[in-house]
Length: 174
Image 1: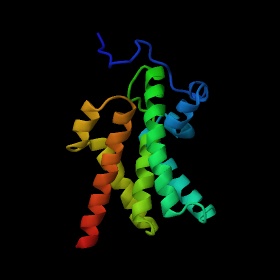
Image 2: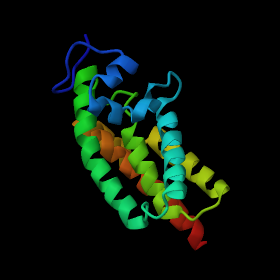
Image 3: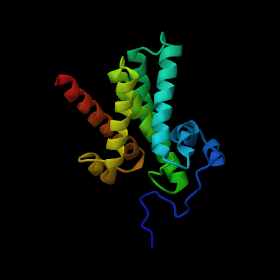
Image 4: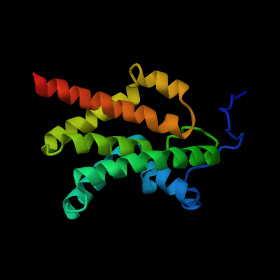
């Protein structure tokens, strides 16, 4: 018998375009469709974050200042807590793999704090972020297991971003 998380329904919905488009929270939580990838949705969400950050920062550089990015990341985190909680409830799995808004917000934070950086450095940021998000070293794994709902979904990726930035800080100090 499967043990359900608090607030989790016995029914598990199939994440697809129809489900995603049925509510704005789903569109956001599923990364505008990037989380619907059948192969490594978290990685696809992170790639979407990288692409969108690059496009928005270059195309509308006058608007996407460091201050406005920070405002957008903080607001996106708060909105993500709601969107991921709602989507998780509707999918029937509190932290469903198709929910990638957490990767998007966390990787935007990484990019904001390392840019300007060349393409190779950004690739390393991507690799380190995905490593920490997948492996979940302490205390990320603790937060992943104990912080539930939308906040838990979002928080463990912020911790993965912190670890990624810590690697860069240590690397740059050598």
